[in-house]
Length: 315
Ligand code: NAP
Image (cartoon, rainbow, N blue to C red; front, side, top):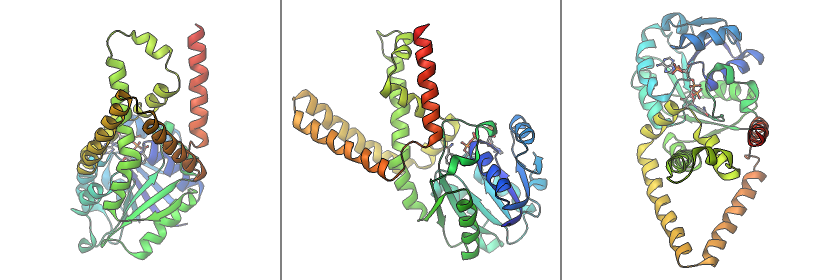
């Protein structure tokens, strides 16, 4: 048992997947679940994800040893301020937010060492395009990385407990500075996501094509982009607005590279195009070898989508 009482704020995809682990792994005596969405709270109750289900922050965090922020990141500041009067001194605060500098800034404005709280930023790098407690599952985190971003408000004891919690979810744990985390994630997650949103929007708006046709013949590429672009709009809006500078720098770089590729095509520079594609093929191989390619649940989802597309095409 790592914690007597743990509280999860926000019982969506990530919060509910963690809740399943905390209970299954016997890491917590009492698990309190708080959400502002009554329907999600009811679903969590029906799924027996915790022990206390409440929309009352005092009930949720009173006596908690650890509070885990798992709402979209733009809600963190308001929640941190609201729970402060009810938190016991020495409580550990952590989060699962996809952007770390903003999340920690918002939390630590209200909860910090000077006020007797311990804060350890965290980000389990795992997810699907779905939302809500009914879509969470315990093996979501299996084999993935959980990044901790400790700072002057953290303690070695709290870092050790949170590391143990994520390791029990079958995650590998890494530690880095919040700013470095945001830079890495902007490259491997935020920019690809933005490009997916943009491409799906562009193709959907193309004139001279039947919408039905685009859906019907959406093999490989477009279909893969729609999977990414089907992700939760609130969560991703918050990520782009809170990791703004890093994302803007990468967009500029991406646009330059895209224009270079455009020029290669225009001037029939086949060698340059081939060399780029050869280099990206090698990166794909490295990703697979590092076992960060599609986890089992994504493969099953894609197989199911392909099966459904075949059925729809035959209709
Ligand atoms: P989600 O499935 O949409 O769940 C979020 C839950 O929090 C919903 O029940 C939502 O209610 C609730 N909520 C929103 N604002 C709230 C507030 N002010 N007070 C209380 N509850 C509130 O989201 P998620 O995908 O689990 O993402 C949660 C966090 O995990 C985000 O910070 C995200 O950056 C991080 N994360 C996500 C992924 C991913 O792939 N999904 C991966 C790693 C980390 P409503 O539905 O009514 O808004």
